[in-house]
Length: 179
Ligand code: GTP
Ligand code: MG
Image (cartoon, rainbow, N blue to C red; front, side):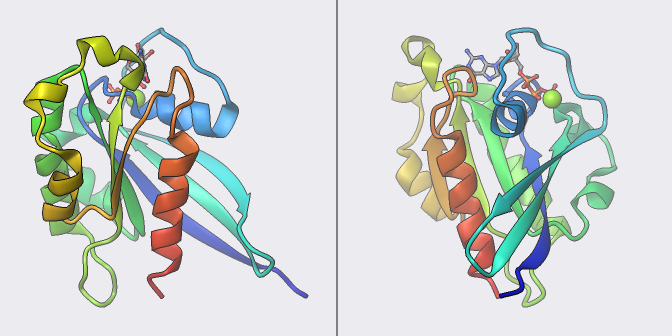
């Protein structure tokens, strides 16, 4: 049987230094670096997934710089995206507070053809730093993610490779069930 190829444009958004680039590097190249170099503008990565016996997915990951929340390019970057990972750093409250700003920016600039929001998964990254985490200060992420229209949420670590695959698989499943 002929396999069908599909290109999926997926956004990775969230504040400065939350670990977006690290999550993508871990997922695509199986590497992690402690060294921080801020993304400028946008970066891209591609992961080819053999999804089921009918389809091969070309996952195009758009790594949007955290700085871009203050710029005016996100409308251009978001165009034709079919899903998003919204990332915060579980050791920094300000990055959690920014989650709804990113989600609002996303939903105001891109939607499915039926007008519904594109699927988005919430990632509480750096869970290897749990002792420095915000757990007591955070609302229950289960309720929070449901209330604000995320299709799922995960505690992740790009450093320890925790739940990165699971989070992206959850997003892709939701994207593939859209049509
Ligand atoms: P911008 O490009 O500025 O928007 O940042 P970013 O979200 O791409 O963050 P980046 O991936 O560059 O990571 C920022 C810093 O956090 C780096 O020093 C990473 O090594 C570190 N980091 C990323 N993910 C993790 C993680 O899961 N655990 C720990 N301990 N550190 C992490
Ligand atoms: Mg980056």
